[in-house]
Image (cartoon, rainbow, N blue to C red; front, side, top):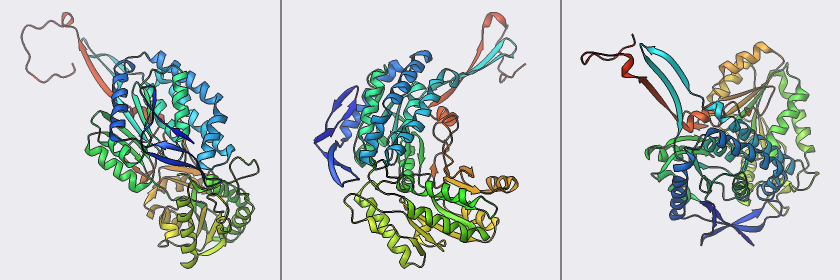
Length: 493
């Protein structure tokens, strides 16, 4: 079987230790991935540091040209990238293609780096004194990314970091690492110099080596809340700039005046797409008043109609989950939810006997806070329904949850929608949109336990994260002769 290697300074390198790569649709190992040592990580950071000496001074026009070329290559290799995602993650090919397309939007945004890095100039800020500001790259940046979007989430990070003049070391998930190797090849084909983009595979050893390395200036992370907290604390203690996106419990609040047919269709897609393995998946429905019974009836009917199968099967609407361990963990929530008093309306456990890592859509009604089904992030195809009487109760429920990644409201009232979007303490809000992932020219990020650090990814905040501002004040002595030193603090005059 093939062994996936690291990419360090433009060269491929294997490690003595490997981990298996599985096809979730069959449960069989299809290859292995090298596991980096701390020395491997140090070599990658060193290569990136050496490359930064030149790349940081490369013109914006040339950086933009590389991004335009990369954008074209990613588009032309969409099917190949999608196939790698499906074979190692399990999501359907159509879903994988959509992932690549959403990631490519960040490359589109990065193509405009000459405009994104325009500074500000003030003429005659004081008598014969001019002032201006501009932004410069940080140096070596690192990205630590999750299994659920092996192409899109890394693309939220490295195109913008590189376009801004930094070099990059990516540590992708060891569960579905192959797409990152192809991305490295595409960067080389796009004309990116060796060492600007590096890939190290592995586990906690590689992660800790990046967090601790003195030559890594910034770390971007997406994953679970406990690990995001750990990454933020450890990297911050090492003096690095950190953005660490954590977990989620995304709610969909449905009002009685909503189009319930549309809401049920949209929520079903958002809950069970990619087998619920999305940080923006809807996992909790808050049914308000008279909306509850008809909405639950529609949700149950849609869940039962979903076709579950291999991601490469064109008839499949939902694929398997990523690993056997993930399937068993999700299964334990379904078992516990039924035993804990929630009403199980759709049971996905019938599929667990299939070869591969399958569990079908599950739907629970009459869930309340305090149940693990609601309190914890399941990250699987399990949707729960909570019932409340009023919009105020729904808002209070959302705000009491420790997560604050995404939320949606379904209503036909603009007044209600505006009140809701202002009152909820959540970073991303959808109005009749269940997965409110911002476009690349806006920034993505949650609140509360869904984000550690104060900067969101991609968009304008991404530019700010991967650069630092410099302010320059200029006076030419011939324009303002002075007879003697003036010891007063300088002021504008």
